[in-house]
Image 1: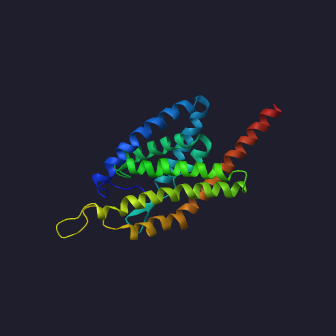
Image 2: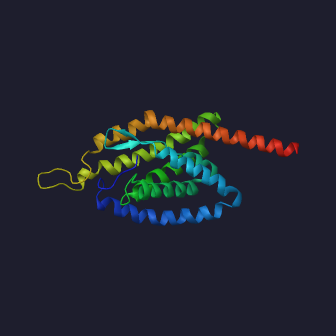
Image 3: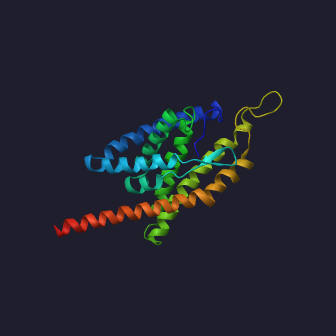
Length: 222
């Protein structure tokens, strides 16, 4: 889902950067307030997990790729602001070191996969928790977060033909419109990548709960 450099016009990524900077500053501040020495190692582990799974990009029609994110796990465990910051930091390192996603469009990737995915997953979990089976809630949290992010990416790509064409009418930036990007990008995440994200969220969260329960029982015995 990483958007590379050259696909997005300055008229899109510059306003996105202006919007992302204050959000990242708030997210950084809230992350500093939320973590301590005990939680830092756990947060780092989950962030590393997101880093790894986002490196497995699968090309899809419509000019981009799909992959899991791990935003829902971070959002449920630490809150959406912390999750957004950690995912954004991961995206920045991937763009800077590995060329996975562009630096000029980092803000759009951050807003989509960091903020939109994290907040969507968090509030779906908050809304459905204790109303449905826990496994279903976790699955839907992961699924909804990545699908929401894919919609933002699809729109950012799909509007580019409207924002600039050359002398013969060919798009200067991304060539496919919303009629291609919405079905290709969002559709693939609804049917496949969202399912992967949902199951990954469910399995990881259940594993964390199991380990936590074992640790609690051991402390009680001691």
